Image (cartoon, rainbow, N blue to C red; front, side, top):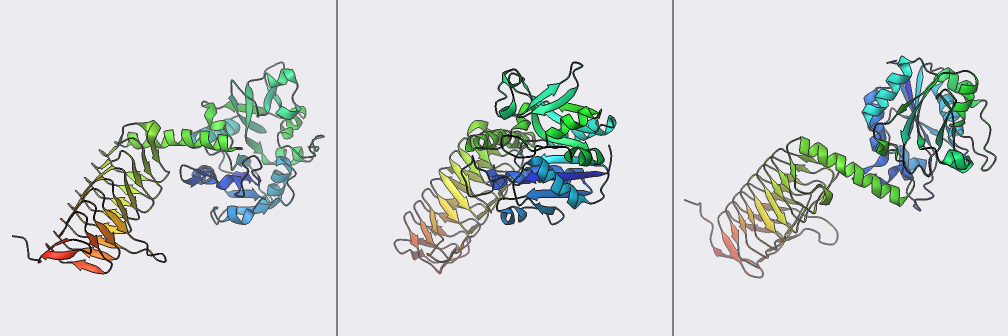
Length: 422
């Protein structure tokens, strides 16, 4: 495979059909902007140069791009060919393979892109398209072939006749080009008569008519071709990406009891021999150790950490909370901004009141403590090692319960003084 690779990412879309003020490529898929998945591909290729063509609210999109990516602004949205032409100018005298990606194709796999590049380079092609076959190809450009079966062009659906609309082979938009051939072809692309835009897909027929070598690679899984243009597309992509994430986690030794009702964000880390029960949501930046039990109906929000052999049970929620090894929190509880030690028992109905209306405060529960059912901890509080709270206790803010003490009541008062456990 050629080492001279430049990547152009087209991400200037306004997301009209999304009906959103958020740039399309920043809409999340499993807790991560869809553009992030495309950037994973770019990172894996180690391209010499990467250009991102931005437009609508480009300042927001730029913040999600690595510093090494050069941004080109498409001031007027005149089509994909115009966008690529702007990117070519920014590439200067680059000579080699140009890979065109789209910021709204988060399901595209790295392995597929590498196979496409290999096919392009092995055949010394002028252009190589990633195609796919769909039973219902509505909304996609169709691949045109000559009498010998060679790719001769692409027709957008809006311009296709009835015969062409019956074609099942579609254009995914992902294309490799010889840089010099692409530059010449772009000069011959004319504006579409209907919308006055310049289509990158028209370069394929230009190259073909000039006796260029045009190849294709058919995607093994047509789902990779899904572009996100609507909320329905977004929901489908979330479902498919969630399946990938769950499968990857299970391959790492985790049991996911019901993959259809378990929602794990990109970037969550779960140790082997842990079991995730149905209707559990685990957000990004959550780390779970080995041999844990989580759910059903649990919600672990960003910043939470579970050590080994922790049980987080029915209808529980954690946010920015760290739980020590062997701790149990089995029923109907909420811990926010808490630091919980080892072998602690959190009784059913326990709640931390961690927000005072202005600031978030931390609750500390040390090793071996037993928090009674329906205890309310008004943060900041500290429960000592081996200490106990009675059922229904309200521990008021700035309270420090001594090691091995017992408190009860509203507000909680000491009923047994501290003393080292024998």
